[in-house]
Structures are given as C-alpha cells and as structure tokens.
Length: 390
Ligand SMILES: Cc1ncc(COP(=O)(O)O)c(C=O)c1O
Image (tube, rainbow, N blue to C red; front, side, top):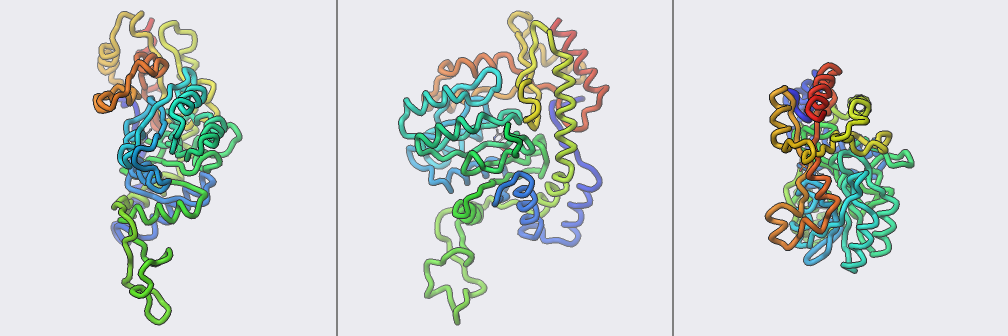
C-alpha cells in the first residue's frame, strides 16, 4: 500500500533514540534544549520552546498572548480542527475568513472584511496550508491595523520560505509560530510541537506555561521571603505563579526529531521534485487540476492536493478513493472545513458563508507525497489517476 504520507526513519534516528534510552535522561535532559536551539537557528528565530504536540504549541501561544474570554480569533476554515480549537481552549471565539482559490490560504481581502465586521480582533492565526506560506506581509498589516496578535500555524510548513527567501518560523511577520512534529509532518518526533518567537517575554512565559505555570527561580519570584537563603534561591524552591499544563516534550522525542532535522533539506528537496513531476503529469487534464503551483519555490510540500471535478466525472469521491485503494494507493481529504463539523455548526458557524473553502473541499484529494515515495511508485499513482479522470 502506498499511503498519502509517511515518515522516514533511518539507522541514525534509531541510534539517536537508543542512545537516550541507554545513557540519557528520558525526559528533561539535554536533547530538548539542543532541539530547540537547532530549530531556532534553522528558521532564524531568537527563541524556541518545544512542547508535546502542535496542538499544545497553539494552545500555549494563545495563552502567552493573553487571548482570553470572549476574544475574537480569526483563522482559516481550511485547516485541521486543532487550529480553531486552541481559541476555544482559552475561552475565546473562533472566527473564520474565506480562503483564496489559488493559494488555499486565508484570503487577505476576506480577512480584512471579517476584521471590519468584528471590529475587535485579539488574534489572527494564518495557516500555511500544505506547506505554502500565507501572504504574511498583508496579514500582518491587517493585524497591526486592529492591534491583533499574529500566531502562524506552521504545522505543515517547517522548511518553507517566504517570498523574501527567509524561513517560516522566523516570526518576521508574527509574534509566534507553531510547528508540529507528528509523523506525517516534515520531521517526526512521534508526537511533538514547537513555538518560535523573537519576544523574550513571550518566551519566558511559554517556558513556564508548558510546565504547570511553575517558576524555578529563572524569573522574578513572588514570595521572596520564602525563596532566599543567604542571597541565593533555595535549591528546591519553586513557585506556581499561574495555571499551566504538563505540555513537556521528552528527551526521547527530541533526540529523534534532532536526528530527523539533519535530513530536512533532503526531505524538502525530494518533496519538491515529486510535486513538480505531479504538476507535469496532470497539466492539461480537464477534470483534475494541481493546486498551489505558483508557490512551488516557497512551499515545504507537506501535501499534494489535486482538485478533481467529481460531479462531471460522474464518480463520487468515495468511489474514486476506493478505486485507487484497489490499485494500492492511499489518499486523504484535507480538510473538511472546520465550520462544517457538527461542533462548530452548533456554535453558529455556517459553511455556506465560506464559498471558496466549500468549493475547494468538494473537489479536494491529497495524493501520495513523502520523501521515500519512489519514482516507480509515483508513476503508478500518476497512471492510475490519469486513467480514472480521463
Ligand atoms: C494545520 C494543523 N495545525 C495543527 C495541528 C496539530 O498538530 P499536532 O497533531 O502535532 O497536535 C495539525 C496536525 O495535524 C495541523 O495539520
């Protein structure tokens, strides 16, 4: 079976994990800081905080930015539910603006209109869908006009570049960026996430929030009279200063992710090559169209999405997917618009208010794209899809 996405593990990854198991601290050892420093250096941000998942990264980013009760948080409907859920976790109101039909990312014009309608917007969470960076200069300009915090959801976009050539995660256009290291993502940690930022205050707060809200004396302590003995903070002393979580990542996960990071450029290069080959193979078809082709130079290519006109093909998407499955090919749909999920409908969101996202969703199909996909496997995918759509 050829899946739509798959991680790639080599002997160096296995050795890195085994080394921790044999010699290391399983958690809270040196690998975590090494992983944070390596990602911060790679993306060009001052600070990075590793956490247990991409979802935890988004949740903590909202908390650190003081997003709270009743605040409006605008994001894209074309994303995994975790992006919007993080607003709900902090008592805020998730709001949505439609996507652009070509980039499949937040459409700055729709975002500006939504901001005008809502007036007060605490945070905007653009999602770099499938690894293609959003139009961040436009989004940041809109956010600044409304005094909103910008948190990039870069779960798909480790290694992607903005049009100015710098890497997603450097926070040149945002206050914080969240990454995911779930196995189908650019690099795998098993589960894992990271927040990058250039703001020291946010960084220090994120560190505390990921570990129960506890300050061990690295930040100013509140009960000085309890904390100090002969001018030094007592070795065992710590204060829980606000409510936090256990969102820590382990050394085992960080060792794996660090080893994976060595291969990231190779992974991205191969994904680009495969995406360009798909673009060529599907060019000129009347009932299937590649997406995001103008962004190839910038994308991290987490996914390769085809838009297929199932209605005019006279074949439902479910039947199309089953036919490919019989050929040993796995596919997936990214995403059911967040606003279409029963929970979000129950909050009053209406899928029809996002016609571009709806139209995109009806025709979307993610086909296999991952580092280890061989040329001959890709040729089989191409031939099978071309046969079905012609
Ligand atoms: C766009 C997006 N945001 C956030 C997440 C959450 O990441 P994680 O699975 O690491 O919690 C995902 C994961 O699929 C995602 O695709």
